[in-house]
Image 1 (cartoon, rainbow, N blue to C red):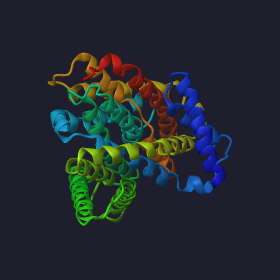
Image 2: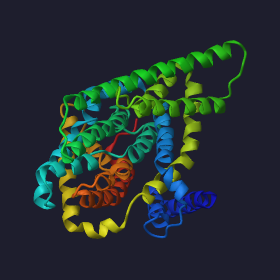
Image 3: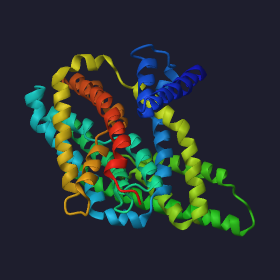
Image 4: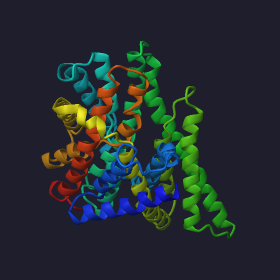
Length: 398
């Protein structure tokens, strides 16, 4: 396991640095590292690491979401309002409809199988989008109109919506039926996640303030460990309540961080944000190398041009959905185009659920995994490069 960790950090960082020198996003080097070191190419990663890969990826995602929550200004988020809410489900819905309409013609699958495929491919990757939006907020690009905040909020909720649809469509493809409660659970999951996180965040604030009032000094480094511990607990609560009550653990983490920022002094929240930023340096490598390791490159060879065409058509549908979300806002056409670009990348959700239909024995499982793998390889780099290269041109600096 230690050898595998050494490979992940050293080769991942080296490849990231090479890509940075070539003016490419670091994550491309990390994804390539994972693909090459993973079980489908050189097979140099220990099975014990791959066995806990999903948990390690979630831990890394928690770190960047905590930094995002500590960077979010609730007043700025209110500016985005309607658009932020719509970004959580409208683009994904348009993309899923795109698959349902066009996949039977292009890939020869049934409507229900196309719906499963759309649900696998419909989520944006928070792992790619969130750190970039946090960076833009820190650099003050687009923050006057709350563009990074809107995209960050939407990307944090988008995967909840898509995963609920995925489980519903998967059940239908296996001969089951859709239930109204499956769809009712989406807003319930979001609301309960936000409330749970807010309560925990406020309780942590009171704890830190009480300890400080009694002349005990809790170092910011210790606060980071405590906040991380409670974040893991919030994710665990989501698992404990599964099948009883729907709660979004990831949204609870963001909500907790937002409340901590809102209640704490600016100095404390800024220091915590900086410390999570430093943790992200290591977490980013682990996340994207392991996402790469989950990609079965063999399936891209069998996917063919039809799969590439399907992904392109679906992304056009998604772009229409994004433009609909920002209709009636004060955003210029340049800023709207940036929103479209920022909502392109796919990685984490597709790596997590892309192989589920195949494991479930669906006849369409192989083609769904092929399209999912291809979507990661195409959209993660294009989205990351698009955001990194366009923000200075398309967004206004405050």
